Length: 234
Image (cartoon, rainbow, N blue to C red; front, side, top):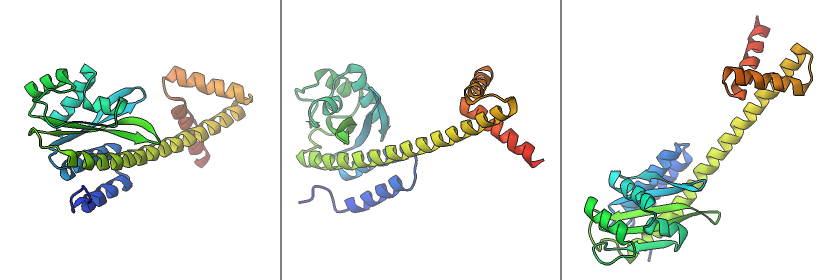
């Protein structure tokens, strides 16, 4: 039996449209956490923790409570969401008011928030642990084993969506890098022609100009090329 409700296909379709429409990375992350609340039984709030190099950050949350718990886990260094990344792929505590594996976190959550149950699901991209999808319930016992199964499906979907937007970002960065490289190459050629120097000397001139103006090398190169183009048009 499919652990997701019948309306899941509509939610998936909307999320898929957001991912592949060229929406911002943040819009995709926001869509994931809101879809999680919509589709997982007993889930009132959700958040995403993502690894940025060696540092984990709160990438998205449905509200301040969810984000605050993620940030609390990071500050304490303990909790189901962190353990999902480091230890077991899924961590589940349906009732924080009873003895728990994370007593320090539970005490703070119970004192400062309405949350009473939590699930942490690991996010994987190409076998690499990149973060966790974190689910929170305001009623003890509202999150069940069925909720865990649904959360695991959402985590898989989230991993694919995150991989897609990251690949898109890497492609955009590569395009920018190629454009910058072309501009620098053109600028070096113009300096070589104007000063009658070789390519190494021309590049040093370009780099020194960049340092003197406190501008990125690519921006200085673009200005040189733009100035030459405008002169040619006169």
